[in-house]
Image 1 (cartoon, rainbow, N blue to C red):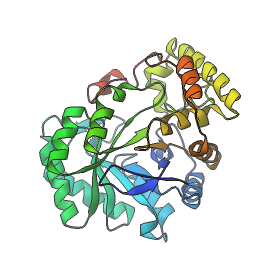
Image 2 (cartoon, helix red, strand yellow):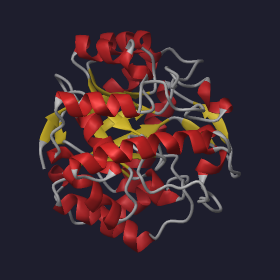
Image 3 (cartoon, rainbow, N blue to C red):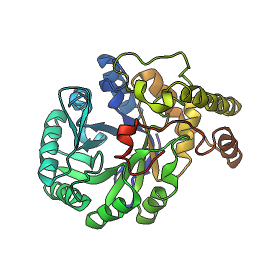
Image 4 (cartoon, rainbow, N blue to C red):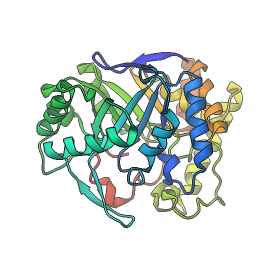
Length: 331
């Protein structure tokens, strides 16, 4: 496994990270034993960066990772944890909380659930519109000084917010959706990150399975699968988007790889400061993803991929309308 540095001040991590959200029901029921086996397989493949959120199934994901990581050398992996999204006993979300006292509270719970003495990268999941980002970042800085956090990250914020946060304390990385069909970061956000020496951890590199090569028009996610409310998976949009996948499949066949591997490799090829997060829930999907870092894409390859899936070609927003307003950038 290759490694990459998250910005000028962040940690050195594996060139692919493991996103654990899907192991806690975001895409329907997940197999607990298989999820833990997948975490173990990722660690054995030298995947060191593991991403979670304290609100993923109300702490379930952190407890799952605690079980999977138990007995492992704490210095052999890095935990990236998002906080601040408020939940209720039902399925909905209740907004965001970035107050300094909330930062300390959320962190205390995460440390306990994960069974660790520090978080490697701690980040607000979204910007709290009622709290200046300087106050939220300042509170995390205090936790760094106290030894509970190693680095500060951000998630889904715009270039202006990145600059304000970075002025308080160096930011290691921004976590944001980036894929062949989600490229809004390229306009302002990515240039700002590179100017300031901040890394990017890209989630949604397979657009929740849509551009993995494994989705079909007649497939349904089942009960509890959030893709059922995703605009890009809705009738009309789905058929158009899968046509893009078939064009990408032809590129993959010419390259001798799978569609998923090509889509991941495209993100890897966008810069050494970018680390894709792979949301594999099974060892099979993880095994498919791992070779993507070894797939060299030439300028001709990248040009053919661009022809197959031009920027802005996808139909539908990347989130339901209720969530789009909380994003720093659009599609």
